Image (cartoon, rainbow, N blue to C red):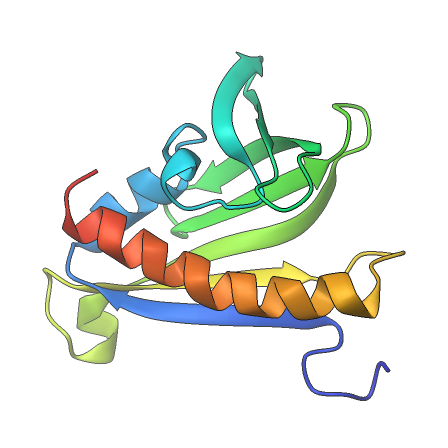
Length: 146
């Protein structure tokens, strides 16, 4: 399994019609995830930088702590079924449009999700498709000004 493409990580990328600083601020806001994180809907802040929501797929509660670096335009998402069981499995990286010749008013958002221990093939396959959808939800939310 480890030799298969995508067996250890899934990535999804979208060009967005907003500056990198705007995209970063959106991705670093735990409550803004309610606009795109299908595995953690009904997002709420539970305190001390910790957020929780429920999966659209199985209804399970998921806890998330975001740790951002505005200089690197990088957000790490620590996820888990309980506040004391968080693992850094997801990141969002924003690339300035100027870096890619797209201009100041555009940027690129890339999501990476690493496969944690115990994730079934079925769940991992769903994650791939979910990731492709969520990056488009992010693009739409950013371009609508959410």
